[in-house]
Structures are given as structure tokens and as C-alpha cells.
Length: 109
Length: 118
View 1: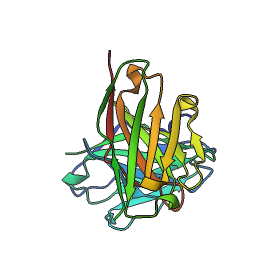
View 2: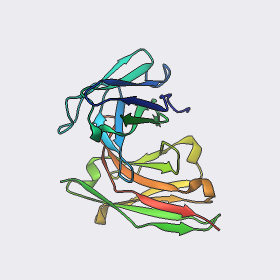
View 3: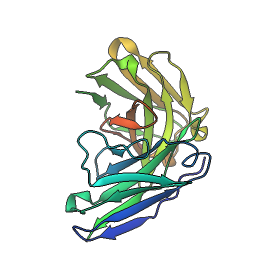
């Protein structure tokens, strides 16, 4: 199972919005509504930000939103804040396993 | 509250095995499947497999088939991940994480650093 494709890095200024894409195939992202997104700060465990494509866990800011079109899922962060600077990973169910994206480093300028 | 407490850092020689534990608290251990995920230095997250603490059923990523074993001890609410035939490429932080109500990882352990070095 190949890793999902994410941009290596994205950046934005405080207050701006950014979108991170996550491209897979019809066997993973396109085939199931089981895409999730994780935020990881250096030295910390990953944190669930979005699950089942669009759902936000309790306690996660509504500045984070998820969507999907075909084989590509997206994470949008609006009103960027300095604390959003981190690595972000998408993940998808494949029918028999789970697969992560390669990760995207978000820099808040 | 749900907590997953992992065992401490390990240093192993190439060819050896390592066994990492993950002790669950704050919920019924047998209610949610446990996954193992690793992040090698300079790399991204990598899913290794899952285990049902209720039945002991497991499912492993193809990459680790034959080299990984996931087990549990329900009497002490603890899951284990053993990885054998270690090489330097297995140097990573290993995490346990629970499955949510569908296919996502909602609670994570703090991570266990495994270093493979001669």
C-alpha cells in the first residue's frame, strides 16, 4: 500500500487560511469516507483533528475543517495562529489496512 | 479520562527483538482496538497494525508481516508490540493508539523511542 500524497510544506501568515491536500486512489481516499487528519508538534504524540472526512472531535477548534472530492481529501485551517505550526498527516482506511500520507510541515510566517 | 501509558526507551543491537507495552486506563480495555504506529527519524507516520484486545485478533501491515507480533494481557489492560530482526531502519518512536468508533485514531500513547545501534 503506497503512502498518500501530501505537499511537503505549506506556509501562511497569521490570520490567513491554508489548505493541505491528500491524494490517494479509489482504493483508499476515494473508496471510503474514512479520512482522518492528525497534527503533530515536535516531540509530541499526534493529535486527531478531523475524522470521517469532515468531523471535528470535541475540543478541536472550528478553524479546522475537512473535505473530500474524488480521490483527494483536504484539510483547511482558517485564521492561522502561531500554535498551528506543526506537521500534519492524513490517513485513510483501505478496506484491510490504514495508510498515512507523507506529512506536511506547516510554517506560520 | 482515557490514558495510554507506554514503556520506556529501548536500545537494541541489530538482529535483536524489542517488546513495547501500552497500558490502558480510563475505559474498558476490551472495548476498543489498539493500533501501533511509528515515526522514524526524519520520516512520516507509518501504520504497523491493529489488535482486538477482546478477541486477540490481529491485522498487520504487509511491510511488517512475519516480523511483528501484537498481543495483550487483559488482566492488566496492557497491549504489547514485539518487533524482531531489528535493523537501523527500525530506529523510530513507536506509538500505540486506540481506534475510535470508525477508522481513526483518537487516543495516543506518549511514544516509546527505540534505537537500533551496534
